Length: 173
Image 1 (cartoon, rainbow, N blue to C red):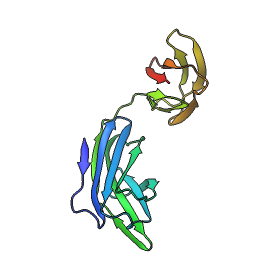
Image 2 (cartoon, rainbow, N blue to C red; image 1 turned 60 degrees about the vertical axis):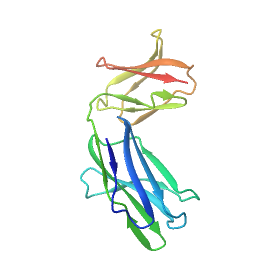
Image 3 (cartoon, helix red, strand yellow; image 1 turned 30 degrees about the horizontal axis):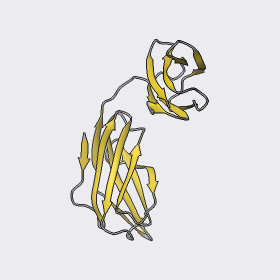
Image 4 (cartoon, helix red, strand yellow; image 1 turned 135 degrees about the horizontal axis):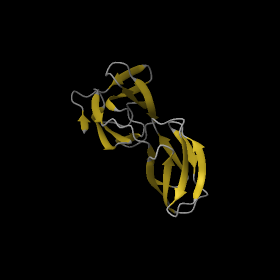
């Protein structure tokens, strides 16, 4: 699902949000001039009223900007752009994205090089990383948003196997 703004803030000609997959919301915006902001802050809310900054983008000579939210909230997320220029702050209209709520463990990114991040509701459970031949590489207790270094592992397909039987595939490249 995607959201698009109308009645845009001064200097902003477009602000959109797109659910790329269950782990990624792409936020894109276009500005009318390259010298109207000192910084762009992307804000997110779960209720459309109370927002927190989730990322900052510095202006360049480009008219097009983007940012990814790789920890989207389950259910509805509301996004807006906060544009700061010297002592003036302007906001874009708010856009809403609906993400399916799921209780599954996720490995981000599914195509990884140096590390993976585990998103889970099964924190505290034992887990291990195995290759497709069943060889075990790492053992650990899962924590939500835990980062695991896989830089020294060979390229190929791997499995995150949790003690409750859940299995998540990912590729090391």
